[in-house]
Image 1 (cartoon, rainbow, N blue to C red):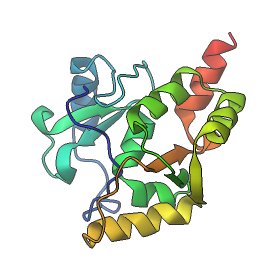
Image 2 (cartoon, rainbow, N blue to C red):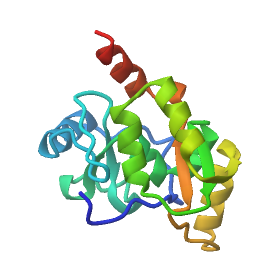
Image 3 (cartoon, rainbow, N blue to C red):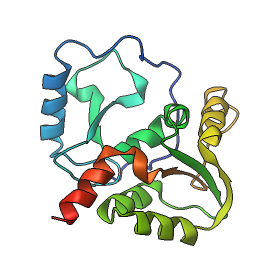
Length: 173
């Protein structure tokens, strides 16, 4: 964690039609356990709803060395085209750079609609491009027209992530 800065990115290859490989649940559990259910970018840890990501988009290599645990927000940052198509959040352009991983962790650790709203109001937003902006930026990244800096931020939609609802319900117990 912390060795590589989280930047918005996209992958050319997508395996929507292929489905999950045989034995995926076992592989996934092995990786989650190895990483102590902790996101390799932001350090957030949760016993449910964590994702397993293929490094550098190598989806056909399911060896544990090619897999890392990510929170759903950090995972969406690595697949912004997918996040945009599924309207999982918005692309924000800020007036100054911020640490995307720190933002993701703060949003998860304080999961509530009020917190999400307050954080978004406090960010130095120059432009909110919405979900379509994520798709457009993914295309620009894939065409090698841009390498986004820390002013480009993925801001998740509070209602689209099961982990948020889980964290809110756990806090209210």
